[in-house]
Image 1 (cartoon, one colour):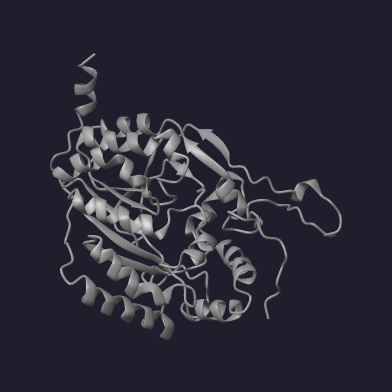
Image 2 (cartoon, rainbow, N blue to C red; image 1 turned 180 degrees about the horizontal axis):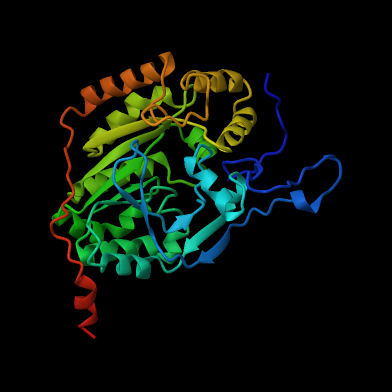
Length: 356
């Protein structure tokens, strides 16, 4: 039986800082009665600026469509408790838990580096994904506008770009997205994990409301921007029953394609989600955890290509069938979208400079 712990940080997904596997030592609190400044949590978000040499990442996973991704930010203030990207924060010396959503690494020179890579004669255009790791429209983007400037760069070079986000802030960039869409250079996936706002506030506390995400789909569709819904991840006992309703509302909002993934808890995400389950759903925490395990043949850290994103067994099969039937019912005419790579112009940077 899982133990119920008593600490809860409102407005955050993770409720603890997991041990970083790259650190030889770790802090532990032996006595809860003693005030220890190491364990006083600062709820403020810390922005950490970096200047990378490259910004385009090669995607080696056969489970993820597309060859490349661009991540203007590392860490994500959305605080989605299940996020597979949490583990990447350990490479920066931080925890995959609270640190991931409180310490946001900003790639300040992302646009300049991207332009340099696009300007190379060796670069062959292929759709890049914003973002393959953390959400490119997380709260700090409203102020910094790095994602917007990346989209402007893609438009300038006529380079294809895909977007996946949980934030309605994407609508801010309708002007650029509309121009990209005229050349078949963009598609947008809105990630919607359910319809219950009470669960959303605990599961992914700083994302846009479900209502605003469906609205974002409707606005994108009205502007002829190819858009779809991603139900990811599906967590047995938490949101699997929401699949039909999400598909119906998404289709009514103009979504033209859809996808889903099963939750998988690689690396430090297992302890993060287990702790979250205990604190938010103590009455069903064991049942949910066991169902997640069952969906991955007993291994929540399942990393097998071709299996890890869909799971296996009775639970995974029931989710697959529910998604398939919902798609047949609400989205029969799925859009077969293909990015345009023929319009790319690596000399666009030179043309821009010639104007000065």
